[in-house]
Length: 388
Image 1 (cartoon, rainbow, N blue to C red):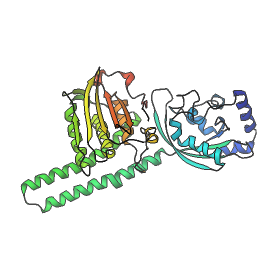
Image 2 (image 1 turned 45 degrees about the horizontal axis):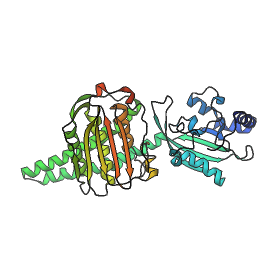
Image 3 (image 1 turned 30 degrees about the horizontal axis):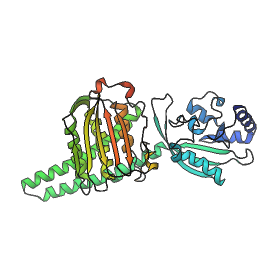
Image 4 (image 1 turned 90 degrees about the vertical axis):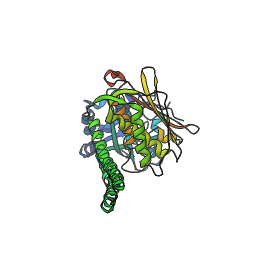
């Protein structure tokens, strides 16, 4: 475990830095959250903006903490060493920025996707821009650490991706079908083309509604409407839609022994299943996607497996908002899966990935949402993964 200075030494460093009037004045006019970290990555100074944002009355409450601990990152309390010492910290942009400044002495920019919790239950996602640089002679070996919230910028890019790419493609397909309808006289062909056009329009509406619900879900304003659902029938119809949208179509292998029914929100459940299937189809490498449902104890489960293996660094960031291996404007699929599935449907989303067996996502959920245990709802949004 790496060493830390004592609280007495931390206070002494903080007081020394506070006497530097020029630095203090500069901090308070900057439009960012600003920290000064010592060699051990502990906080020895902060601007007022950060204290107000975090609701901290006195900086002395957080002196000696590391950035993740002050920002209440959900991983910062998982090991005795705290922030910077877990497996998740190995892919953290904030931690990488600090280490690079210490190694190179140069100014560094990084992005950090952080999940925080102030009460150990409800979680919040943040996209942060990090700028770290040496302080210089005023505080040798210390780091100036600036944090800017770029969540709105990320959301704007996601909207651009949605409207300028995904929906544009679907709208183009719908237009193509409409043009064919205009030129076709055969009634059977007309009926088939109308069905295809309707599917394309439904896809456009579904994408817009999904984004709207995601925003409302993050605000805690999404209503759950429970109804009786035939689980296997829903999975089969959803899988058919995902298979038909794949190029080339992906084979779906169903494995279930009984017809299962449950009481849940049909729209949200279909969103979770769709994200699970899309994820599997994209990672399958053309191999069949295996779908299994069943009952274990008091829970039902949906298991979706593909032959692809996720590298360790991907596994560590999988459920973070805006994280994607597909480029800018992506990264809402697995995040939405977790958000809808846990916080609203009272289920649990887990995954396991290995080079030998591929990747399996499992969604556990109660047979009756109305009687589902509250303490297992996603208010916790815990990220429990087996990482190889």
